Length: 115
Length: 113
Image (cartoon, rainbow over all chains, first blue to last red; front, side, top):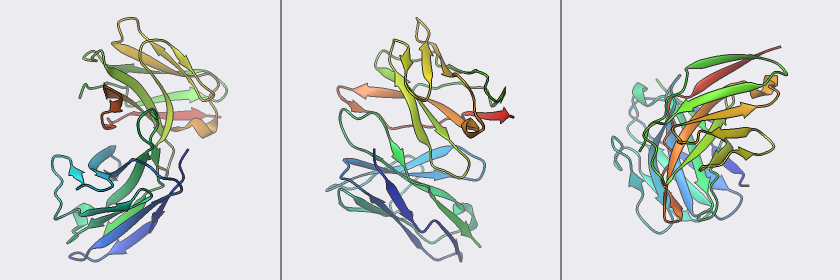
């Protein structure tokens, strides 16, 4: 298994500012993912973050808005830049250990409210 | 990615079996069927997955139709803790690596005491 710690667990931010969300895993993992879950909705994949390479963004998400870092095999950050109320969501980190492991593990999420 | 269709919501009584259906008529030969669930205020958690044969684990059973165009997640005795949104997801296998997890709307399961 993998235990994921996300910080902060929640925050209220002013529009126009940026927030960086941290994702720490208790073991080395190959693949890390960032999801967004808007109120009452399902999860939407933002990007895949692999160590040593640029993050791969899904359609509708861009690096300038959601820059991602992946400095090592246990840590990643997602920044939500120049926030607007439409960015109010839960942001979740997910990890997979690599080939042969079919299970994904999720953090508890960061609940972001933009006012 | 191939799509799945699930009922928006289902209800069950505590300690009774629950059968959660999923239709995936456009499934391809390399798609695995995964189930995750999301308890209130938590991130999703893995439940079970399969390819062609029925699968059992400590949490649930997965029954896969012979033509693979549908599957059913079975909770043998529902508890209050099983109240969650259940997601059926097709995950493509690319020669050992997996496609991304793409979540649909899922089925919200309510369990009555």
